[in-house]
Amino acid sequence: MGQHDNTETEGTGTPRRRTQDERSAATIEKLCNATISLIAEVGYANLTTTMIARRAEISRGAILHHFDTRADLVKRATGGMWASVVEAAAAIRADHRAGGLTAEEFIERSWTGLMTDTYVSVTIDMMTASRGDADLRQHVESWMRRMFSSYRRTAREVFGDSGLTPEEAETLMLVVTSSLRGLRVGQMIEPDPARARAALALLAEVIRARVSTGFSP
Image (cartoon, rainbow, N blue to C red; front, side, top):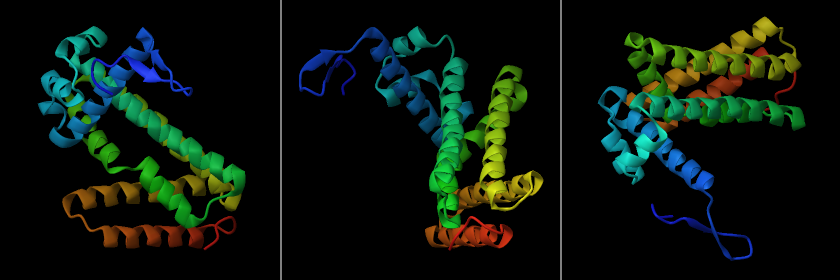
């Protein structure tokens, strides 16, 4: 859809003019997506609103219409990214309740939902950038607490149903998420998909060896 296209097609095939709220939401989504991709590519320190406008194919005036400062846009964009991680953890719990996951499925869902390469790259950059900015640090730390809380909740529900105490479940999840995070960083430095797949398979074996029930080969 082009920058000035304010219509969309309904299920009947009849064009419908989008509302102002819908147009604003679409613009903000484009800006947030552009912001995240650019932080992953060039880093927060090098990020400019001009770059964001060009990537999103939206005028700088449109950015200023929705966000007072670059920091406000960055907080909205990163908050949305981190919220998607919390949602991914909730989806893992829901699928566990619906019928369970194999150890391989649990690791794959964690790899692609909780620890994507963009998430890891942007998070590391934002943690570094926030050290000298109290407002940004509060934003980052608040989301880190929410995400880690979602990890622990997932661990207690999934691994707790498999025979582990809450403390044991949380420790196992810490091992899994820390390993996945480190693996993502390693793949950024020296990409090796085959070795990454082998590491994911090994983590699945660790889970099966640690829990007593609930995870099948």
